[in-house]
Amino acid sequence: MIHKYQLNGYNICLDVHSGAVHVLDDIAYDVLDYCSEDMQEKAPEKMLTELSEKYDREELEETYEALYELYTAGQLFSKDDYEQFADLMTKAPIKSMCINVSHDCNLRCEYCFAAKGDFGQGRCLMSLDTAKKAIDFIIANSGTRHNLEVDFFGGEPLMNFEVVKQTVEYARSIEKQHNKNFRFTITTNGLLLDDEKIDFINREMHNVVLSLDGRKEVNDKLRVTPNGKGCYDIIVPKYQKLVSKRGDKDYYIRGTFTTFSKDFTADVMHMKELGFEQLSIEPVVSDPKLDYSIKENDLPTVFKEYERLAKTLIEMRKKGEFFNFFHFMIDLDQGPCAIKRLRGCGCGNEYVAVTPQGDIYPCHQFVGEEQWKMGNLNDGTFNQDMKLRFAKANVYSKSNCRNCWAKFYCSGGCNANNFQYEGDILKSHKVGCELEKKRLECAIMIKAALADYNTEQSTDCDSGDCFAECC
Amino acid sequence: MKATKHIKTLNNANLKDSAAKGGCGECQASCQSACKTSCTVANQKCEK
Ligand code: SF4
Ligand code: SF4
Ligand code: SF4
Image 1 (tube, rainbow over the protein chains, first blue to last red):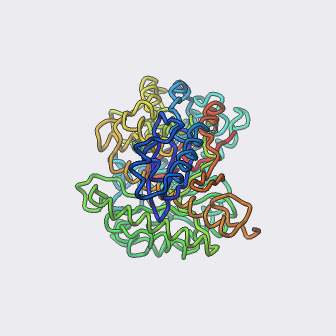
Image 2 (image 1 turned 45 degrees about the vertical axis):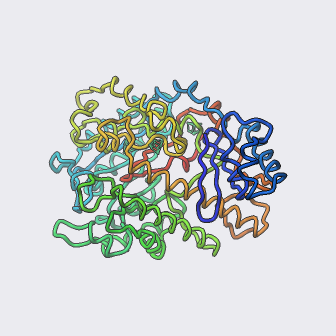
Image 3 (image 1 turned 90 degrees about the horizontal axis):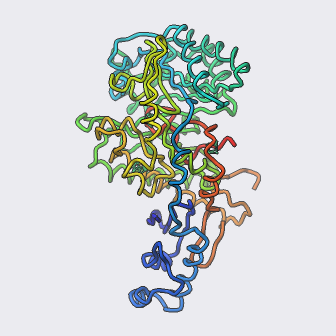
């Protein structure tokens, strides 16, 4: 299977099953239409005739030969022989956990998937006792996995900061004896950040996700306090302080775009102007009936905007200015193995979420959906059948994904969105898929453009995204 | 990167090799959703 497309003046062909990315000239792009899974050595007469008006015969033959060479090298129309690994894609210990330390929030963001912080279950905080049980649970269920990820989430986790602190302390005190290495992350809206919390986060958290939607008027339209005031002025200086003291540890500024902010390139640029470099803005996922949701008829505008953002990123890199847009980051060479890519997000199998009541759900997005409750930390229940069901929700069991060109980059999408909007965890959420595919097209195009630029600068380096001062 | 007159290939196509050696599961989970530490799987690091 291949995926060919034109973007920003580039003719691009992704060979899906090998992962090869080819940038073609116009003639090769046209000839490609006459190539298929069972390519023959001799150029097809049909192609030579049909393209004879546009190109010279000899050139057509030469181009076909070059494409055939890629075909024999397994880089064009390579075969899908991954099903033999289906077993590896299923059974797995639990290695990641989302601890909802707070089902309460000090903001009332319009689009919050957590029903403004309480997941529809009433406002409450997790006790230290339950948080410790969560740590014990992941250790006990992680088999031989060494690296364990724990994300403090909510609601707003800093509303229960003492428990966050003591949970980290507890996990650190027992990780060695169990041969584990905890990696903590926290996702915060920033309101409660102060010096103590900033220092704690910078010391203990492997990654920190700071929510901000971009420009003040965009952020303050939907990210509001209970009395209706925007939060931009409170949080931005705190984020700047946190990031300036963070060194080279991971963080990112994460925003949401809605139908009110389809010109989100401006928001990304605004974040950059505020001094942040690790940026992410993602489409709101919500019921299409809600006024702010991104609907199918918004897609053409959003696609154009992703293109605009991609071009902006290229221009800035050429000028030696740097920012990372999370969804355009792609590693064409050293990314994760194919098994990992096909296994999916891991929800309900490698990853679970726990609530203040100790309830266990497949992931943070399923929290509060009674039918998906997997068990409880206090009574020791855990539904292994449901775990297996999620384990099997990999790319090869999702009919749309199995034959999708994006499967190695998207991993089969979001089970929770599939369930919420399509009624079935195995049925891909259409708007989500279209957005994902567009982002990928842009990400690959950026690689092509930067490779081009590097060639023009005639450096020896072939890394598409390095603009180190040294070369 | 490999380039001929008509085609420039940007990477070493190695997905198939990676399958044979991979699957250890030590890497980060890869939630794809919009609300979280969401990470397009293709930009994740292999821990091996
Ligand atoms: S750590 Fe590397 S080899 Fe192991 S599953 Fe992840 S990507 Fe694959
Ligand atoms: S979720 Fe959608 S985009 Fe992703 S692999 Fe499946 S069909 Fe393709
Ligand atoms: S189901 Fe969706 S929200 Fe849950 S872990 Fe998977 S991608 Fe993330």
